[in-house]
Length: 270
Image (cartoon, rainbow, N blue to C red; front, top):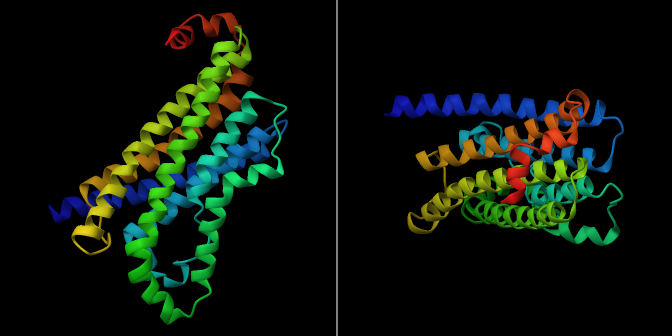
């Protein structure tokens, strides 16, 4: 059993490395290859980068990487709380080309600002104090709260994005905008499903912390599934980025009527 778990963990972490590489290539593609570089493109690229940093952080935490490289423990690169707001604004920018970010939109990113501020505050502490904070405060309290907020804010912003998409599907005619809305609807539902699976790790970690009085230091079967769900989010969104922003618009010059005549029109009815 121990050997099987070891093989699973090695496979997952190798897979995580490949998925992160794929996600970063997709994000760079959004910035370099996109013509024109719209706000939607930039937000989608940023969302991919944020997911890559989140997965990298979880992989190092679960795999013991931070124990081998303690100087990286509180490096303020994990902005998981910005994933939901960035995707939500990407959906708005994709549905409404005239959409622009305004100063008042900063309120959506206050949790992420608080997250990176907490990491910076811990990162500048002396090394000896960082060890105590890492093995106590961070593992027992801060990381579970961080995961809880990631799930809550992620699902909330996916729900808000879904409401925008549903409204546009109801009012748009058979044009390219309707096609975009239908694709966004599918992607929003899939990401919400992956995030719900990821919440299983949060439950597992919280039970261990509260009932067993110890932080999550090794992977369980539930955390395998949850970590795979996090990888699935990045794979799906990266694939969606390539197809929706590059392949479909530039390669598939089919008529809107033909595209909407099959499964898309059936999806609209539901």
